Image 1 (cartoon, one colour):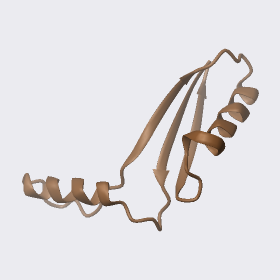
Image 2 (cartoon, one colour; image 1 turned 120 degrees about the horizontal axis):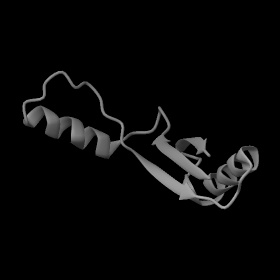
Image 3 (tube, one colour; image 1 turned 90 degrees about the vertical axis):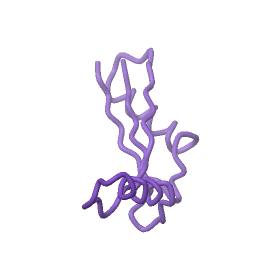
Length: 80
């Protein structure tokens, strides 16, 4: 089973990397970009065959290691 985790900064947290990308896009002539939020994607290949158990396990992984839940949110996608 495959899992994909999208980790992003919470809305109230400053995103200096996103701001740097927004500024660079403007410098390259891409006007009209008013905001950029940077995140990360983590793909996992799991032995689990039950989608509900896989999601529970991946959420535990996120809470313990993959995401800093103080400043980051995450979404989990499970695919058979």
